[in-house]
Image: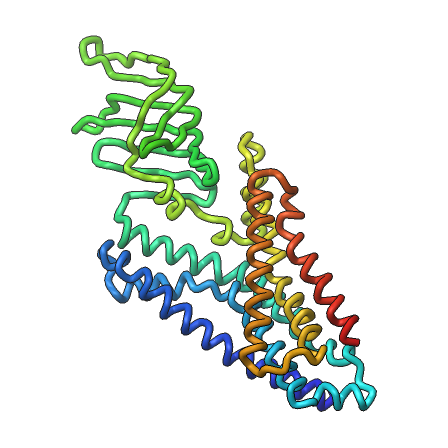
Length: 356
């Protein structure tokens, strides 16, 4: 490893560590004090609220942003001090400078993927468990297959599948008991929709105990209005989300959902997104170097940060837009997750070619 490579790696990781610490600190301060009233109102207490924030820290999303800023600051300061010009005058190519940056991008991409696979699912799951136990305070059980069980004083409800984008539930079973825990009523519904604060169930088979003959009488109403005591927002906190599952687990779940006849488009988009998000580290390294070595950054750290924040903002907006198109089945899941990356990678390569 040459002296130049050692210097670049040391400087990039120095700024990366500093920026990551600052960004995490700002995130905790802003988000914590923004949500603390809601947590305290739910009776969580300061310590439990703080634990939820720690478990729910989006570190995998912050690392790509921080490495972009670190690369911009490192090469921006070198460009400002005419170090880039001196290297070019000595016959050093931009592609020579790209090698350590490229390696850093690959290493961080692998590291972010590892975090998303191992640490993030566990931490997000722990945060949701703590919120359910201390905050919502409902008797709810959710399995890995997204089966949702809701227990109240005299009833048990089971929901086989919840579709977040449509506020729809499928495979509903509700069983009511008397004081002796004897079933007095059972409702089976194929699906249900949430409208105007209530759940409307369809394709229903209802069984009621007729005490006069001690038998269950069946009926088939077209629609029933049911109160679960849970809104779609509560279900979103209860169900195991895509970011709480590993790539293999999510892929297995998609196959299971499709085998049962349900739409898994949303989860397919999230599956491809699990690979697309870590690669952003590599893309930001290439783009950051391309912008910085063109000699256009002369305003110091503030201008470097402006370039970085602008690039991150545009990528995030376009990436979110593509995800929405993917969720709405207007764009194939693969392209929904990867289009933004491909466009910004092309832009990064173009800036490098122009700089050379």
